[in-house]
Image 1 (tube, rainbow, N blue to C red):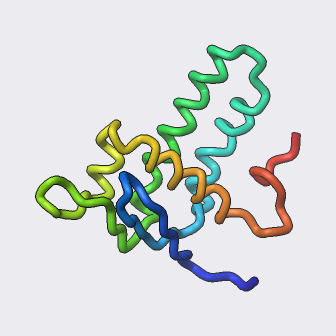
Image 2 (image 1 turned 45 degrees about the vertical axis):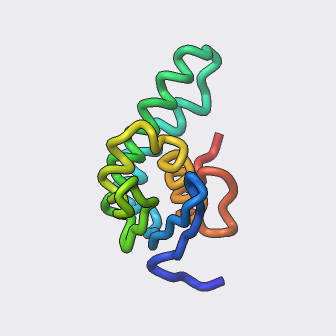
Amino acid sequence: MSYTKYLEYKTTFDDQDVSMKMKRWTRGAYMELAPLMIKARDVDNEIEGNLLAIELSDAMVKNLPDHIEDFKGPKDDDGNRVSLKEVIDDVYFLPLVNEIVNQMTVISYHPEIEGDGLKK
């Protein structure tokens, strides 16, 4: 495998095709996310863990627009494609947003790095 700037990603949501080009997390985004990943990983309290997971998810979602291009979202009732901004802003699309964020994290690390690239 060699380095490519963007990776094509295709999935389905509400039985509709969704596609985009994903760019790996930038160093700036990673530096914002890494402390939250460390905190979330090391929490024993379920409530605190859930709150940190929400904070981490919010930080990831905030960084998505800078890392996604050529987004072709699901269609609305009128047959128009839903924009990435609408997908991010509407809680209805939370499962799709979570999938995108998870995939972004997977593609961001070199294959030789396991997990989130952070040592325990």
